[in-house]
Length: 140
Ligand code: HEC
Image (cartoon, rainbow, N blue to C red; front, side):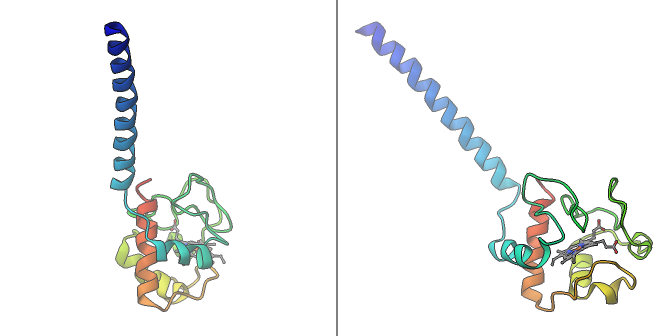
């Protein structure tokens, strides 16, 4: 009985230990940024036809380049994506929240000659939300 008690204690600590490390894993996922629900919806509606969701596990181009890790990246500079316009490549933009805000408001006004066939997101709140969503995608 004494021995059985010890064994179950060991088993319990084992299970508890596993739970703890699962909790730690979850906490570190959260540290990578809480997904912006409005941003996720706007991304799905307005961007996902051409860009894979940067918060998904998949990192691949569609018509448009992968946006994983977009924050801090130089515009038009993603190895493996061959279709960038000279306009975007030569824009000198380094993507930040501010640059994304101006570009997404009206891509063709900010980068004349960009081949991103997207009229723009005129709503400031929607832009902020989708940029926050791109930001969490930059940390995954
Ligand atoms: C019709 C297809 C299409 C839609 C819709 C679209 N994009 Fe794009 N996107 C592109 C293409 C194509 C490029 C490359 C543009 C170029 O080279 O001029 C691009 C480029 C970009 C870039 C620059 C990437 C880089 O590596 O420099 C960002 C950022 C971006 N898109 C974000 C978005 C977001 C956010 C949305 C939704 C609000 C969106 N796009 C909607 C096709 C699209």
